Image 1 (cartoon, rainbow, N blue to C red):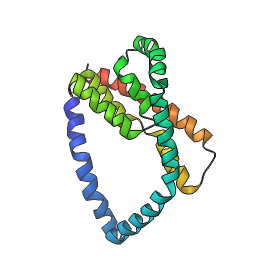
Image 2 (image 1 turned 60 degrees about the horizontal axis):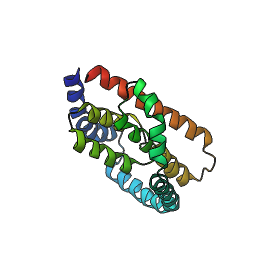
Image 3 (image 1 turned 180 degrees about the vertical axis):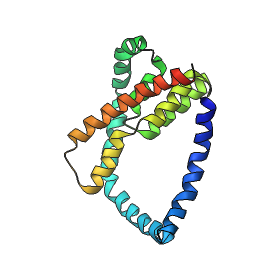
Image 4 (image 1 turned 120 degrees about the vertical axis):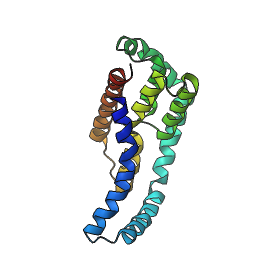
Length: 177
């Protein structure tokens, strides 16, 4: 099972990089011109979302520096231990919806601590691929188009992240344990 997943993972991105331009050429879409036009729009979007990103980064820093994250992890660790979730990956479940860079740094730290082939590192890597940076995505995309009421999207995104986290742990038990 693991070798099939490894083979599919190794070929997925190169196949997409080749197939997308070929499909665009088949549909007679000017690939390079479309790319540069999208890049121009991306620059304008980046300028518009800077205030939203600064606000989110400040909130994340306050959350981590205040010790609130450590308190929250300590409170839920016994419950998650009963579900078979290693306590070392719990901060990742909290960080991942908030910040991609922070969660990646934490995953890297787990890999340095436990080794890249350890079960904890395999869970962390799978969580990275199974969840999203919900708050970041809402900040960027909703900020870019001016949507201010994001309550339902936030709830659905966070529930999806929770489900993705538990699914990642379950898949790791099935594949690696």
